[in-house]
Image 1 (spheres, rainbow over the protein chains, first blue to last red):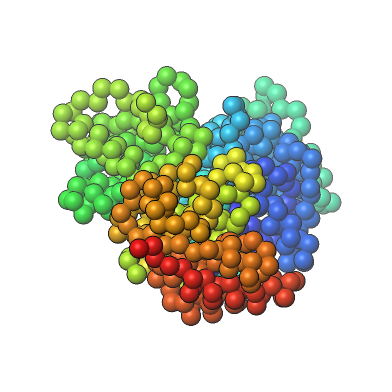
Image 2 (image 1 turned 90 degrees about the horizontal axis):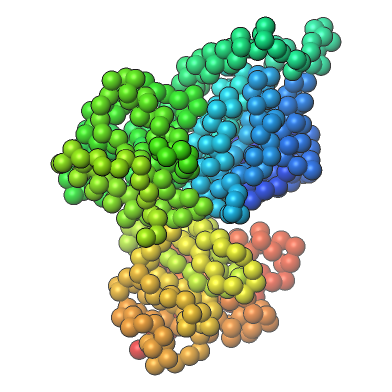
Length: 393
Length: 193
C-alpha cells in the first residue's frame, strides 16, 4: 500500500533521495532548490541515510564532487537551480562525456539577469544540448516518481548518461500538495544496487578517466554519447513499465490528455500542464475538442512519437518557458516543428513564450490560446507564429 | 462543502499567514481532502504585505496558478485594508474574514462596495488572552474553518491537537494555550450586519 502524504515538491525530492540513499550528495544552496539539500542534510545528521554529504563552496565544486564520486564507483546526486546550474556548466559536459550517471534535481528558475529568483525554464534550456537526460514533472508526485526511476535509466549499461529531474521553482517546489509515497523497501528494491562495470577504485582494472581526447577519438566518443541518448528511449519506457507494475502510475515520453480526439492542442512541460488540464476540462464541457500533450522526456527528444501524436489535430500551440532569443521561437517549439516537418506532419503550429521570471500563468491565458487555435482552424491564417502569452501590453 | 474551495490570505511578513495557510492545508488533508497550500513569494521581509493561497477539494487538483476569484479572503492585518485590494475577484457568495476591531461603516467603506458576507474577529485579543503574545494565525485559522465549513469545529480541534503536539514538542507548555485560542476564536468570529 502506498503512503498518503502531503509534501512540497522540494520535500518530495528530498524524500526520494532519502529512499535512494546514494553514496554521495554534494550541493550548494540556491533558491528555490535550497530546501532539497537542507532536508537531506537532516537525514544524514539523524542517520536515516549513510550518504557522504559534501557541503561544497560552490556549484562548480558540487558537480566536480559528483563527477569524482561517480567516477570512483559511487552513486552521486545533487540539486540546484538557475545560476547554480550555470556555474556547473563546465562540469555538466564533463559528467556526460565521462558517461557518469549522476542524478540531479533541477528546480527551474530564471537565469540572471536581471536578478530573478522565480520560475522559468531558462536554466534547463541552457543545458539541453549537454548530453543529459532531462525529465520534466507536472507536480510533486512526478518530481518524486521521476527521481525514483532516474537511476535505473541513467545507470543502464545501454545508457550511462547523467539525468536531471526538473520541476517548477516555487510553483511546485514550495506548494504543499497530496502525494502517494512508495514504501522505503520497495524503492530500495526498485532502484537496486549500483554496480558500475568500470570505475576508478577497482584495483583489478586500473583505468584513466577523462584524459586528453584529440582528433583521432573525440568524434567517435561523441557518437557513442549520441547512440546512448538514442538507446535511452527504450530504457525509459522499460523502466516506466516496471514502475507502473509497482505503483499503478503510468509514465511514458509524454502524457496525452484528451488528445486522442482533440482538434486543437497545446504542448507544454511542468506545472503549466496541470493548469492546461483544468482549461481542457472546461472547454470540453462546452463541446470544444481541446487536448494536451504534456512532455515528460525532453532529452532524448521523442520526435517521431510527438509528430505522430499530433498528426490528427488541426492546430497546435507549443509553450516555451524560456525564450531562445533567436528571432525564430523557443527551444521546445523549434524541436516540435522540426519533428513534425521530418515526419511529414503539416499541422499548423504556433509558439507562445510565457511565464518568464515567474509571471503567473492563468487559466484565462491558456483559454485565450485555445481561442487563437480555433481561429487558425477556421481561417487557416497563422500570421506570426512566434508569440507571447501573458505579456503586459 | 463546495467541490473546490479557493482561499486567499493577506498578511504581513512575520505574522504567520503563510504558516496558517499551511496549517489549514494540513488539517484539510487530514480530513481526507485534496489540498494545495502555497505562498506567493515576493521580496520577503518583516512587515511587507504577503499573500498565501489554499485550494481544498474532494478531487485531485491540477491547476497551478495563483487564485484570482477566491471563495474566501482572510485578512490577518487590518492595516492592509487601505493599501491592498483585498476583495479583488472575491466571489459575492463568498466571504471576507478580517482580524479587526473596526466598525461596520469603516469596513464597508474600505472594502470597495463588496456585497458578500463580512466577518470579523479580534485575533489580537484572543491571542493576548490565551498565548500572552500576538500570534494572529491560530485564531484566524479557526475563523476561516468556522466560516467556510471545510471541516467541523471538532475535526479542527482534534487535528490541531495532534499538529501542535508535534510542532511544539520542545515547548509543550504552549500547546494548551494554542488549543484555547482555537476554541475561543471559533466562538468569537462574527458576521458584520
